[in-house]
Image (cartoon, rainbow, N blue to C red):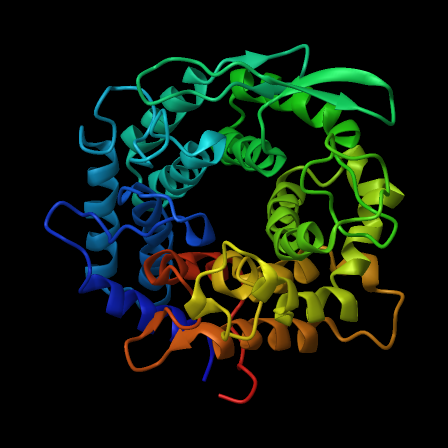
Length: 384
C-alpha cells in the first residue's frame, strides 16, 4: 500500500462526516481538552480534500473542499467579524495565534487550488487584524470580539533583558508561516512584517545541547537541564516546530537561522534514539496527573503520534533538510522517511473506518491532521 492510497481512503471516509454547511467534526485540541468549534478541523480537511482531488481528479473532493471553504467564509466561523471562532471555553474564544494561522494556511492553499480570490482576501484581512509590533518583531493575539491581547513580558536570563512576546513561541512561528503562504505572490505589506520577524528569528530560537528545541525559550536558561515531564512534551513538539521551519525553508531557504549550529543540531536530534524513544515513552505519561486513564496504556507519548502526528512531521523534515545529511553515506533518507511515515500510520490509522483515530484521546482532531502527510511524496509504506 502507498501513502496516497491512505490519504484518498481517509478523504473518502471524511466525506461522510461533512455536514450540509461544510463543517467537519470538531475535536477538543488533543491533550489540552478544550471545547472547540469545527473551524480548526475543517481547515485541515480542506487541504486533504484538495490533495485527494489532485491525486484522483474526482470532483467530489473538490466539491467538499469548496463547501468547507464556504463554511469558513460564513458568519458561523466568524460570528463577530474579526478572527475565527476556534474555541468555546477559552476566555476570548481563540487558540492564540495558531488558531487563525491554521485557517489562513488552508484558505491560502484553497484560493490557489480552486482559483477563488475571496478566500485569500479573507485570509489576508484576518492576518492584518493582528497588530504587528515591529520593535519586538511579533504579532499580538486577536480575540474573537476584536480586542487585542497585550504581549507577555519574559525575562531572558542569557542576555539579561526583558522582552515582550505572545505566550507560546510555536504559535508565533506558525502565524509567520501562514503569512508566508499568503505572501508567495510578493505581497509587500506582509513581507515587510515577515522580514522583521525573520531577522529576529535567530534570537528567538533556542535548542539544548542535545539538539532538542526549547518549547518556551525565555522561561529557562540556555541549555538548562530539563525536568523530565517538560522534556516529554518538548520531544513531541520538536517535529511540529521543525515541520514549520521546513515549510519556511522551501520559501526562504537563505535565512540566517538555517546556517547556525543551534539549528543544525536540531536536525540531527530528530535522528537520535533519544528522540524516537521519547515518542514511544509512557513513563512520564503515566505519572502525569492530567493523563486520562484510557491513555495510560496506549504505549506512546500523548503529544506525539497521538496528537502532533510526529511520524509525518519527522519524515517531511528529513526530506526538506536532506542536504544537511548528504555527507553521511550510511544514512538513507528515503528509507527513514518511509519508516517514520509508516510508524505514524501503524500507531494510529484505523483501516476499518478509514480514519487516523486510534490510540488517541481526540479522534476527530487526529483524523484531520492527516493533512500534514499531503506534503510528502507518494511511496510504498513499510509492512502494510
